[in-house]
Image 1 (cartoon, one colour):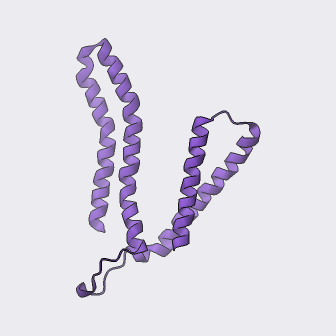
Image 2 (image 1 turned 30 degrees about the horizontal axis):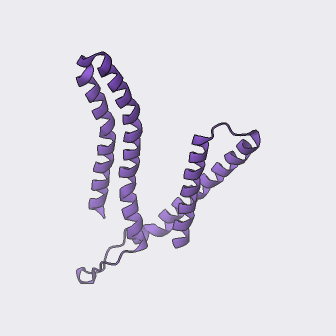
Image 3 (image 1 turned 45 degrees about the vertical axis):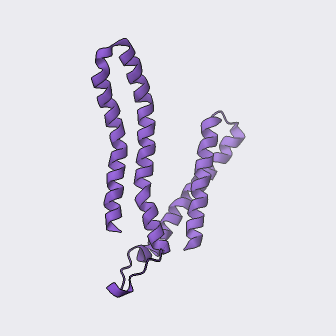
Length: 148
């Protein structure tokens, strides 16, 4: 079970590092472009395979119920740890998405307010809609946390 978690972590770190590299150096030489496409395909395949393996092997740990109320322990198992990570993922991803959305919307709203001060109310509505993305992720995480 631990090797699957390590494999997933390796695939995620590799994808993030490749994404940063491609973001800051978009004009790659043709030789590097030929290298990155198969590398990304392999990393995504490893990630999806590890996720499927964790679902197949770790679902019993995550969904295990204690046999009796007297035997409840506070030990954190691998399944419980994966469940807690799964609860945090919606909040993290929705917060990143809200940050990506609010940046350009806030800049455009500031420019619009500078030219026309009466646009303040309308621009605040647009910024609030973009911030709502993070709230949706938080609500989903709270709902999932109640299921653990």
